[in-house]
Length: 65
Image 1 (cartoon, rainbow, N blue to C red):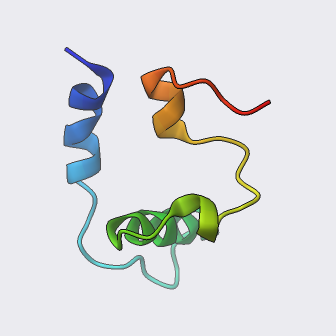
Image 2 (image 1 turned 180 degrees about the vertical axis):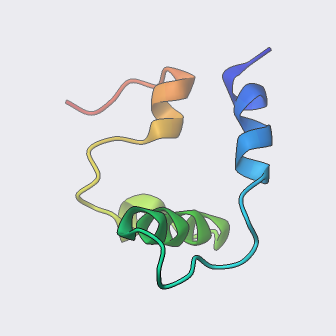
């Protein structure tokens, strides 16, 4: 079983509603990133300071040095 196949059930279980105001800031950051990914926008354009792509890491794609 591939890593992405293994991760799919976790990703698909995310709640369809946005996080509530009382939830921790980390939940808001993750929710925003998740919804941005669903919008077919290029994550590296939106998050230029992100040092790596988790998908690239999981797939074994070499990182820019």
